[in-house]
Amino acid sequence: MSKILGLRCKTCGKVYPATPIYVCEECFGGLEVIYEYDVNKREIENGPKNIWRYRKLLPVNEKYIVNSQAGFTPLVKAKNLGEMLGLKNLYIKNDSVNHPTFSFKDRVVSVAVSKSLEFGFNTVACASTGNLANSLAAHAAIANLNCYIFVPKDISISKIVQTLIYEPNLVLVDGNYDDVNRLAIEISSQYNWAFVNINIRPYYAEGSKTLAYEVVEQLNWESPDFAFVPVASGSLLTMIWKGLNEFDKLGLIDEVRTRLVACQPMGCNPVVAAYRGNGKIKPVKPKTIEKSLAIGNPADGIYAIKALKECNGLAYDVSDDEIIEGIRLLAKTEGIFTETAGGVVISSLKKAVEEGQIDKGDVVVAYITGNGLKTQEVLHDRLKKWFEIKATLEDFEEKVLGLKRIKK
Ligand SMILES: Cc1ncc(COP(=O)(O)O)c(C=O)c1O
Ligand SMILES: [Zn+2]
Image 1 (tube, rainbow, N blue to C red):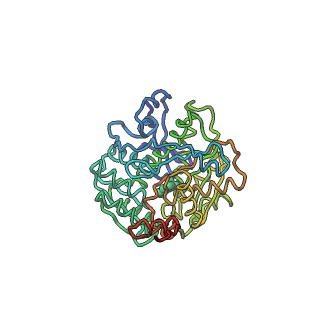
Image 2: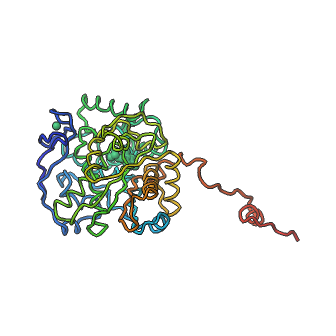
Image 3: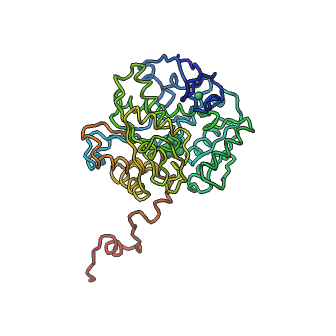
């Protein structure tokens, strides 16, 4: 059984006991969970087909696990899209069908809510760009916890409905995500609640490692050559890197050969811009149709940059039109309907191929982290037109097939 040794500052290395804290008191760096590892391949392979097969690499006492069946989503060999892009080994990690709320956030929230129960909290809360709100509301319902959710007031109506259905206290804030997050930090200092992405953040973040573990397992215990990852706060990318390196340290894979590719919208690209520039994050004011990734001041930005440097990674940003094109391309070729974050990933992949960064035979994984039904409004007026006819064979043939019948 792996043992949690505590929390360690990702900047200065200072170690703390594993309590609900998230920032280093010496240097204000972020904290991460450290373990004394003890796990083997067989134990993992014999586990349940969800994220809890990796429970020995997650920071939760088994007694408190809230098992919402998150994880073990399909890794799809993308034959059609691969052929179109000239890639022989392109895969889609399809978290758009994750359970229970159709985004990768079900992984992190499942871990965070379990840990909140273990700490004895009776109220969970978060600041969210939408997907986290959906997932936390569902998990609070499963775990029977009080729930407060703070979102910017301009998130998509589908995400509001997908949150409210679980009956949390949903608070729409007049401001962007960075304003919402600032308010949530202030509230978290006044109320003894488990803010999953604030005071529970070190534990919450660990859930994202399972997106690395699963891909490796699904590739028959190999790491991919490239992994395209959507970036908002930078936590997901940082944790995929941590997960790959843990598997290496544990001897579960021969080497980590993966180059990570950070993908952001042009209208909110602080990590991509920093990686291309001097490595320093300069906060931006988001202006894009892509609301899930609209974090202008990313909490884990500096750690995402560090991971990108370590893996000799790449970084792309794409326009709003390219995001729509990416969504349509994935649907048309692979039958997968993704939300805007997936459009960012697919268009970034296309750019990397066009730039000649990827060899034909490379094993490439595109992380599709959310479902298209969540952001339908962006597609308004941008889809192929439908036909409208009277209920007659004649009208069908004329208007749809373009045939003209000769009248007898
Ligand atoms: C669909 C989707 N993909 C990716 C991300 C990026 O996550 P992170 O904040 O860990 O960078 C988010 C964040 O909200 C998201 O909603
Ligand atoms: Zn520190």
